[in-house]
Image 1 (cartoon, rainbow, N blue to C red):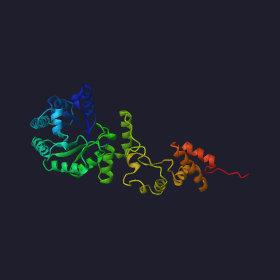
Image 2 (cartoon, rainbow, N blue to C red):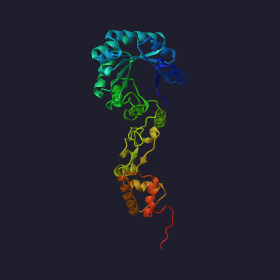
Image 3 (cartoon, one colour):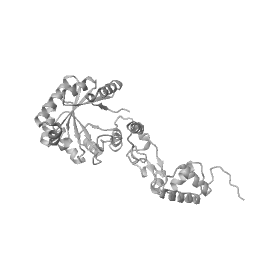
Image 4 (cartoon, helix red, strand yellow):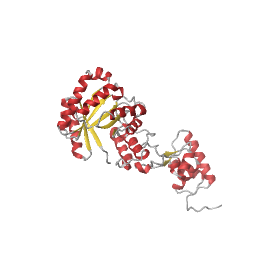
Length: 346
């Protein structure tokens, strides 16, 4: 699909994961990245896996340094610099993350950024590890980091407050060159910025060519849903079953006339490999019923459309799903003729 970087895994985690990362690196022309703590064995495993980019990280917030990493600020900086130097010495591109950046004291964050920049790090990733950033504050942090380094800046956002995609976009606006995303937003806790949301926002709202084949986004999302066992909510932006469906009579009538009336316009179902759907239920209007009946080969009169619509609304109000089979049964009950049928008068 043209995805720019695949962070394939954590090579040191297990032999199976090392082999998976190695196999992915060997099987694609896309840049493949391996993750590593600022620990020698992690870094060596990542380098040995054959990835083109090693992503090293260390905690920088006081709460994580004290109660997770059990290290001082000075030790964190020393390990970060040594790790970046080792990756660069191996001739591999390096990304560094000050983990929990949004809960890190700004002066210390700047110190870490300057230190790894002097070690010639290629990328600095700014992680909102616990999802506490807001778009404006996150943009300020990105702006601060970019002003203290010549490295390219990447962002990693979590969705604890439903702001991951918004924060990724605010990162771009503040000067970030790249965002880490995951298909269907899968990730720790509430997840990460969703691949499909960020890609389509950049393409459609910022009018920027990402180079990604967006017409396969729905296909990719369904594949990940199947393999991960994590269901996609119907109201999931871009790829949910309801993303391009219309039930409300006002909406359906408008969309039948011109899809831009009640869809974004700059993003169509065709752009993501999906289809528009007129859903039948308690909010359905006559335009939608008439359209569906015509698609099914019926030629209803206005009075017949009204009668069928009333049945659809009543059926939907009982929280029952109105399928095409149900609609055709209603049409037969009302006596709607199919197109081309002869009507015999007695």
